[in-house]
Amino acid sequence: MCRWLAYSGTPILLGSILYRPKHSLIDQSLHSKLGVETTNGDGFGVGWYGPHTDTPAVVREIGPAWSNRNLREIAGHVRSPLFFAHIRASTGSSVQETNCHPFRHGRWMWMHNGAIEGFDRTRRDLALAVDPELFLFIEGSTDSELMFYLALTFGLEQDPPGAVARMAGLVERVGWRHGVEFPLQMTVAVTDGQRLWAFRYSTRKASRSLFYSTRVETLRSLHPDMAFLREISDGTRLIVSEPLGDLPGAWNEVPEGRYGIVQPEGDVMHRFAPRAVQAPA
Image (cartoon, rainbow, N blue to C red; front, side):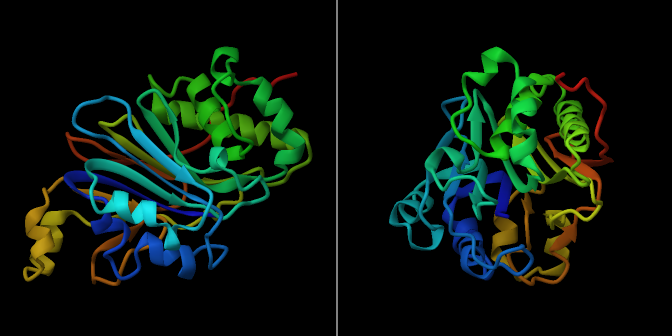
């Protein structure tokens, strides 16, 4: 499995989140506490939005994050109000750049922790459900990228929660048809550069860990001596596979079968359930 984080809020240097916290994502690449594997060294990626373009920049490499000089260089010089970071532990697909997250299509970014169980049996049927024009953009061989393009096929740009629900519904239906008891395991982050959606769901109802940060104004009242909290806006939010530290009151678990939206008009959380769609014949 993998570890990831998504940041939205006051523009900051990527390094202040990727490296500085006690249990940063870089530390998690070697010492994950809540992941299936302790080490996540099968590649990494970062994606961010800048001030002069609608599409995100994405950098992905196949080596481990903990020793990559290019990542440290980028993290020390790039400032962004919204960025994704992902460290990979392969579930079977090749360790190659095109299989590293986040994935990008137009202004959209996507990253995933989990797996499609029985993907070797269901991959062909799922791939046939992707819109032929979108299929041309698939570069790698991961279940995660295919999930992204299924969601795009099912209307991600118009209705992200509905599209992810239809993707999940198809994965489950195809999996069950092939005798897979628990086809889907996922925590997913997706963004268009303005809003951020995060999902936690699994067929087994025992999903991988996912947490969101407490509201900044609450943290300021709990920890008035922390200068960092005075420098960021009330709307700043982090969503992470596992907490970046042990600051009391800072982290909250995303409940099973839920999705949240981080947006300018205020964060919300809703129940998530797959939706039925027609599976390929």
